[in-house]
Image 1 (cartoon, rainbow, N blue to C red):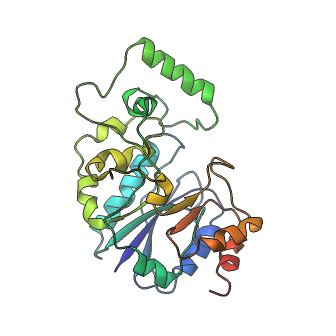
Image 2 (cartoon, helix red, strand yellow; image 1 turned 60 degrees about the vertical axis):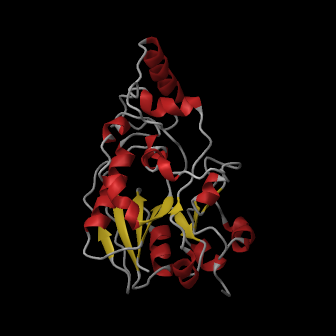
Image 3 (cartoon, rainbow, N blue to C red; image 1 turned 90 degrees about the vertical axis):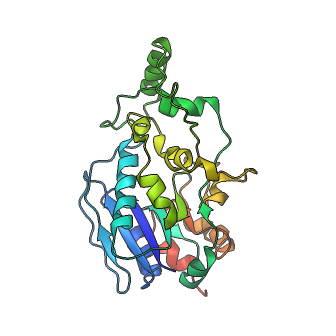
Length: 271
């Protein structure tokens, strides 16, 4: 099977991503990378994998710019000359939790996309209007709360009479490429414009018909090892290596997030 790993990258340190590429360097695994235009483009190398940088844009956390960068990645994969079986979405601070051979043999289901239980407040991510698309609004809770109050006072509901049921889950996923046309050609992309944290509703809303009846842990559904109890999310360090080793070659393809690329070598020692 052919795999395309698409990466949403940022910052001026790509050592973790380079180490991940080295780990998965294989003729059946390629990398499509969008690197935030606010930062220098990293120099990444592979011997067997193809590395494709796609046209860049400025990306701001929590805004619809994340969705448009993700859509660019999906479009570039779909239009590529290579027919991929699986598409995986990661950040540049993710690390692998599978050996290459286990990774290539693991994916055999139709969907590795996490869904969270529906919450009425989650609907406001899309139904309210957020004039924030070109702003860095991380850690500006008062500003976002003020925007929500204004939307409530003005009775704004951008989803009214649209017949759309917004859903939510992790924005990182692994899916078969057969889903790409449905995502890329979605008729109601305007609902994600001027959204807040809309990247966690993007695929879940479009692929809502595939939502499982029995909800499990949403990160497990997406084959991702992420700890939201110790952080937002927690950053794994060397002291967590025993914990990460225990889940290698199980049901998690990637873990996030890390800042030390050496963790990858240490986790896979003796494997």
